[in-house]
Image (cartoon, rainbow, N blue to C red; front, side, top):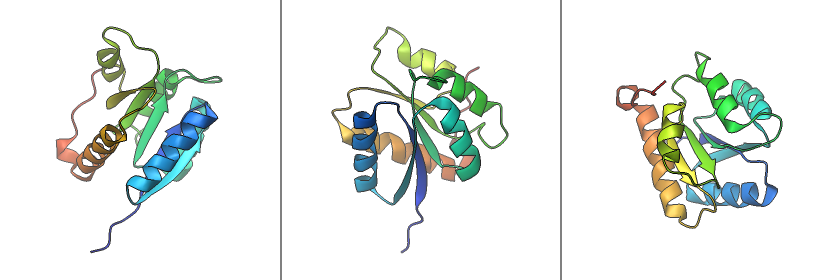
Length: 139
């Protein structure tokens, strides 16, 4: 059985965090991993390469993850694209705030349990394969 490669876009301005996440994702499965260092660059790459999933840092220079995800959700092709928020800033209600802003899921940095990342990525990619199972985004 042949498995098709899925494209994941990692958007992270910190080079060390980005490199570790890319390495881990590549070791998890058949993923082509793209990267961007800010939200503006992420939108350009996403429009050109159409990833199957995005992992988006929330706090970045040029354009943050909040604004980039909002812009992504305004496009026909990005409306239901899975986007996982990635943040080191822990707040009460942070997950709910991210989900309400259009993110599909939420991860805290530093990531210490990559099996959690794998479960979230696989779950969202499976939902994307079955459009009827994608939960609506709260806006």
